[in-house]
Amino acid sequence: MTPNEMAGIQPVRERQPVAVTRRNLSGLLASLAAAPAAAQQPSGRPQRIVVPYGAGGITDSIGRIVADSLRDQTGQVFIVENRAGAGGALGAELAARAAPDGQLLLVTELSALSVTPSLAHVSYDPEKDFAPIAMIAFGPLLLAMHPAVSITGLPDLVAQAGRLNLASAGNGSMGHLAAEELQRRLGTTWQHVPFRSGSEAINAVIGRHVDGFLLAAFAAVPYVADGRLRPIAVAAERRLASMPNVPTFAELGTPDFVRGSWQAVFAPAGTSAEVTRGLAERLRTILGRDEVRRRLAASGAEVAFMDPEALGRFLREDRARWQALIRAANIQVN
Image (cartoon, rainbow, N blue to C red):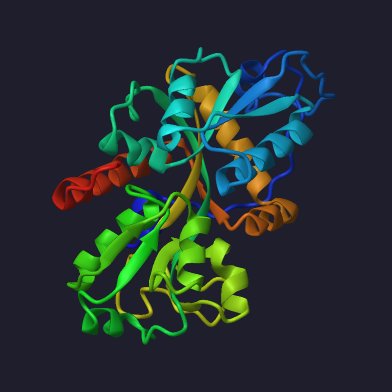
């Protein structure tokens, strides 16, 4: 079964925006299904969108796309708050403790809820303290090497078992976990070299201090284009428009290896199902727009919509998968 079949990713269909009158986000979202088109009356109270990572990254960019799009649709003010730290746990804790009144949303990389709780103590329950709203985007990982390294395909990784080292953005990062999974699937080994960020890892490979990496594909595009990196495979269901000559892992004989940055929207637990479904439909409409798709692509992501039920299932399955790997490989953070 493919990841799409497993998670219930649904195609995005363009719909006309629904304009309604409301005093707060909860009232607006709860009335989506029944309210007729009407003039929007913006509320004086800003809505908060918490991003549990620093400014400038993919999650921050997507959080601002969501904020801008909801503002344009509703006439409301949406303020993005960056609460970085502890692998996304600090911002997630803030969202988990917020009132379920529709005034605060969490836009996060899914690993803050599926991976971080398995690596460190957190004060929130990833399944009980959040109400899933929608998966909105996915940014795949890329396996790439320094051009001087004699690796052109996955068989070369196996042939050079024990002699390669691969960089990551840190212990417990998605690149680290995915590389560990790939080793097990290929039946090979390499040395893991953690850095403090993806940019440091890329610079280490370009400088030939490390052989290669498994990192966000988007971050590597300019270095692939100018020949400073040799791409091997992308962990996506289909080839990327930015690197059309780079095969997927499935094309190279490793099916269902779709790994990367899943970006999703949650509300505090207790938020009504009527509200979460209403906002999910609004986000589905937003994601169908060409301008939003272009902005996502510029941020290194593509549309990957899931409704609240599908996102909840995906979170449970994703958490179980990484939890099992972390335990089996005895992965620990510094």
